[in-house]
Figure 1 (cartoon, rainbow, N blue to C red):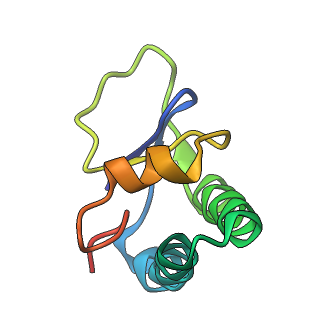
Figure 2: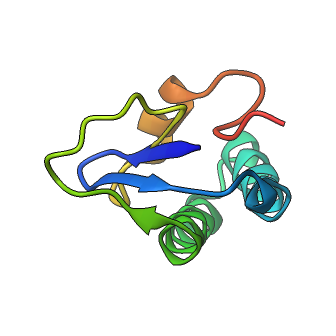
Length: 92
């Protein structure tokens, strides 16, 4: 699966990693619903770090269709709320 991190690029990620990423996504969603800005920031960074760790970066000139699009590390809570569907950032 191809994942885009806005402002950074794309990574190829094996489907087997989604259970681990969904845990962070669930935490992020709960922090957003409660308005926990510091928790949101911490969990967003953890989610993006995990995607970078587990994924293989695609070359900058590669333009593959992204199946998931994640916010930039400096995205605000309100910006991410606007991106979300009811399923969170990572569909279950």
